[in-house]
Image 1 (tube, helix red, strand yellow):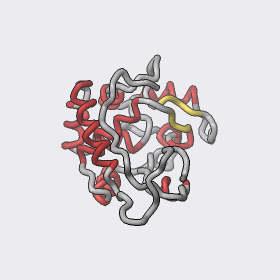
Image 2 (image 1 turned 90 degrees about the horizontal axis):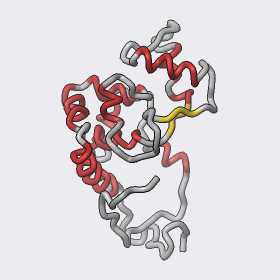
Image 3 (image 1 turned 135 degrees about the vertical axis):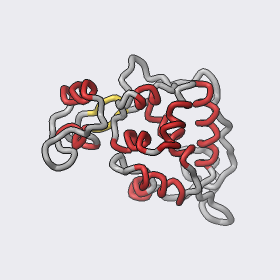
Image 4 (image 1 turned 180 degrees about the vertical axis):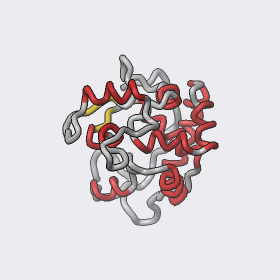
Length: 190
């Protein structure tokens, strides 16, 4: 994935931890099963607001999702063998061609498109009820979030808002004092 230009300035000279644990990272990533209320609460705990939630969800314009993270929306949404009624029926049919009910290994692109381009394609797809995760669809259940989804279809607005939200997210839980270290090579501890 490449960008034609820098979206935001990444600050350097920050302290990094010495140990990275997957369990800590996963505990801080919103679940694809969260509803809007839970998403909003989790973002607020980190000092982020609804705009940050909707804007940062736009990162789903690239990447893939594992079938087991959304197959309940296709095969057993309410426990009665039904589809999620908020999912576009044609999109659901397409997803069923990719994922069987108990598939844990197959991945599907987050936004169906030709290239891995970081753009605002997530939002028109979401407006058409083609959000892959339940947490994507949840953005359409809140009036303010739904309005933001409509506004972010504009790519220029998306890029500038995404940059602002990334800076805000980058300021969560900064290490200070003697915690961690300032790395000489970003990918290695000193």
